Image: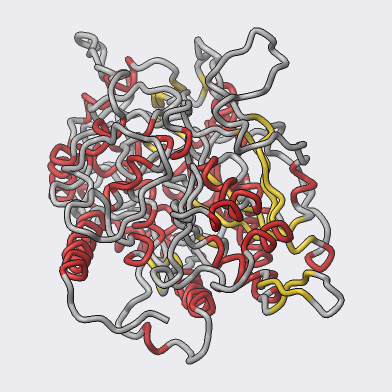
Length: 623
């Protein structure tokens, strides 16, 4: 238990940081971020059942949030259009009636909140001239184009382009003429300064109005309105320098990260924020963004603008695999992005592909009772360019080290309780960790089956079959892979960012196992998922992972016969959460739901590219 303390300078620093964080979150909410279980402290957090575990309370509140979300479901065109006007402040776009018919014909769960990500992404573009957006869309490479309900041939089949092309082709008959530039890189590419985005957002808000029905224009202008394309616009892309310094300009001026420069020393274990004066991190961020040590604000916990320590604990900011970023706001569609990026999200190509590395069809493993009550992870040591001077800070390397009983035992014996990739957190400072008196190493040996199948070493060997890595070999040993369908024979499936988002997340959600998710990336479906109702959220530092596993699996003890067993777990709650997540994914994350989302997105994008956009709309339900 933590002791009562008098107010110290450390506490004062924490109070100031909390105030700043809440201020920034308020600003972020200004232009409609995705719906999410955000703050559980509504003045009544203390009313949780006495003696219950914090996760019990988080699950309870998540169920309430999910129930409130479903209460907004609409079933007919009139109420759906009404919900749109109430939430968006204008009429739906032309083609909205056909979109609704398509959604109903495919048994979609229609909740207006599900589409919040679209408006989060497109709102800033409403502050730009429509012609400028059209010209950029036409001039950017790697684009999908539609004319007269037909798909134009694209010139380059690089990476995911054919898959996205096939996805849009499914709904081409419902779409107007448009050009849709695609980001074919792993990493997102747009980071406009916060001041520019704030200006564009304010301008877009000022343009919102419910136009009288007799003044509404019901059809989009033809795309050949720009017979003279004008001069080709040169868009500058940055490929050098610290990505953190490129990214933090998109943070609000008073956010914790805006004034913190990129780190230059990545040796040693990641820093532990203690809240001391002068520290360039958010003190105990996992505490401030949590309920008694467990994530309660999923939106904020993914936001690098609120956690400057991510600049030296996540590969995307340490040394990304590739970098090509522009500060210009141009239309570019992609599968994932950081909260500060301005890319327009669509379902990732690997989610749509029928034959991808992460496609397992209808295979979901054994029934819950037949699954192993253990955690399993396999994959490559991706996340960016790691080498001998920075590897200890990469997220996947840190997670695997934290799950390795041998490394944890060695850390427990070390003077500073640390290994190259992590420092064991003081139990008195973090309420969610496993018990002080439990042998963590033996416990992890029993409950975790994790390891790398490829170290992706930065040192190239003449022998292509040589998979050794001098700077990683002392700490990590390659393990045999597990086919994805066999992963479902384990109850707990952690999911950690790689070079960008993790492509296995959707298949984990569709499985009957329980996903444990840590990420800094946003995806198209974020507005549809409620943490602690459909998956288990985890902090990117992983300080809560022991507490999460201790709650669900239990702690270990040695029986009279000398056998190591687990006890005091919450298997029933884990099963309920896993099956609820699977059921929900099968209702709102289907291939049909991806098409419904993309159709809605492109109807809105076409309107925002039209010079008459402020008068365009659907009012058929009001006739």
